[in-house]
Image (cartoon, rainbow over all chains, first blue to last red; front, side):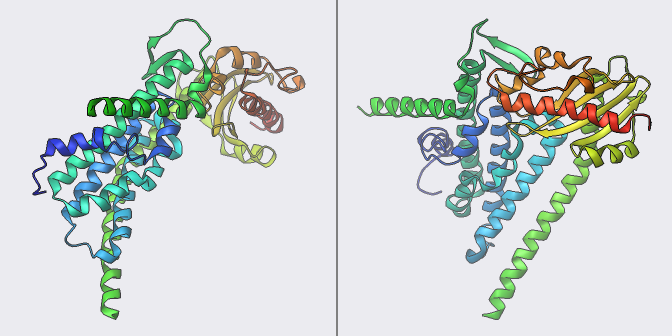
Length: 205
Length: 184
């Protein structure tokens, strides 16, 4: 881009000011569903970030050759292909997590966060900017998943299990299960959004 | 007009072809590894379900028995035989998706051990199905025990659907064993 924004600004934009989940509120469905464990957040985040960065780069590379009228089907084919690659690789190397994430991995194809970046950003910008934009959005998405996963797993089960090891434990008590169930996702997410908005409005004053 | 349609069609075809080739390559690279992982997990579960079996080599999949058992119990996926009995792998729908388990049944028709291969139940509730407190109560049960949650089986608090699904699996494994008994 020639309007003076640096790559760093683009990255920061994806993580904070235009955070896909907390600000743009896209890609929520998968985030609410898988964030009941920290480990899920790690792998889901990596998978989505990989697809975002790869599809952004590829689309930026061929953006001048894509006929405008059929750009959407082409974007979908590109995104779906990267998702399938992630799907197969995860099935081969992290089968336990793959099984747990279940349908949410193939559903990255229809995550509007990714198509929106392809259509709204990568098809109009240079490769470097598109890559950084994808990375920023992906890291922003991953961070939110990690915080949500940590809070929900810790409060809802009383401990955090990572790679089959208990890394944090609150000791013996009866944890409020609601946090690992669906209402817990909305509660945690709502509070995170409120905190971020409060922080930003404070900063403005 | 026509030429534009043809051009778009060809462009899409090229994109589709390139994508297909890339996916084919990825598939061929990961295929063996996926099959290997799957076998490894099954073998591990079988060994847990049948105390005494120390190596995967002692197990043998019996496709004839599988076919026979599936006629009566469609939830049966695989059957392995070993010196001390059979191990039946089943899949039943739980609360958050299928629950796959391996049930080891000894020569005497009693449950020797149970191991969950995969499940996607609610953490803290249904996921407790993997715990010894729940699975342990099935050890030694025979078809005569009429397994039922709330009666002969103590369910998991807050996870009725999961408990029922798991109990149904053990019950079906015992029924399948009855069907194939004597055929090994």
